Length: 385
Image 1 (tube, rainbow, N blue to C red):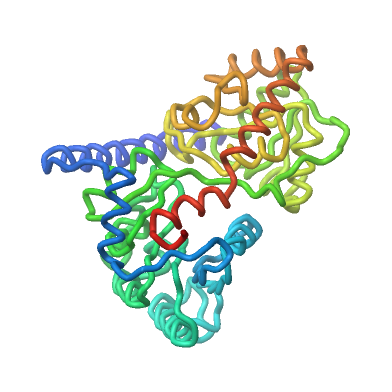
Image 2 (tube, one colour):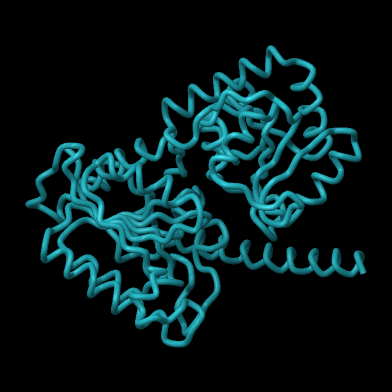
């Protein structure tokens, strides 16, 4: 049975990989044929300023912000408190059944009812107190292009955050609408993507993209004074190749503790997750995209672990390189044998490991907070003085 499951997973992985390759090739060809280019920051600023010629930037702490997102786990603690630094935040949770007349996301008619309720709510809020900027974390699963167009009528620049556009820029198609960002992206003033090779896709679809990764919140992701009781730990879901890698590490005599959905220890709270990073000599990361071989993207963990003071060891890929000095601030591995070698080296060189851990912590604090990310995009939108 294990062999058949393996073969089935290999077949699915191959099909996903071919689909992704075809999608990427299509967008690259169109991007090149039409003579497109990725907009630079000065071009983005000028374009948005032309849309809002009477916009007066406000000082930090005085912005009126509309934030539309649902907090599955990290969103509320990380995004909410980081946004509040910039001013008054009105948060709308699109998952709230009250918006959709009590309907749940898996029920017929939910998206229509929720979109109507969302627009009705934000329009009422805007009449009471106009917004300076609108931040959303949405996809085609939640909103229609028509809804985003109407959100622009609020008179404030609107930015959408999208993570892992590597495989979900288009995503599944339902009722002729893409469940990813494809069909809604052109209606935002700025599309913030954490996926470098999605920039061409956004431009082809008529959107204005900005490549900027996730961040971390130093109020939450911080070092704890904990004894290092784990040689290696991993906190995250149990899926893909993760169980196989963990099992092989244990067979190689490496002590690895795992936490999160699907592992025997189960899920942990945010605080326990961060404390686990402080309790671990090495914190393991996986950079791959589920169901795709040799396909990687940036993860929130790439910034949360170092900012929490954890020594970070993750899969090597090029998108990490602009954000860390590899080998000095974080360590990366290529393949299982290299992973084992790096773990054994770090465990045998505690002084060197400590230097790397401290350097990664300093870099994350200096450059990789959510507040810093929002500061940049709000300035680009002309909302922040």
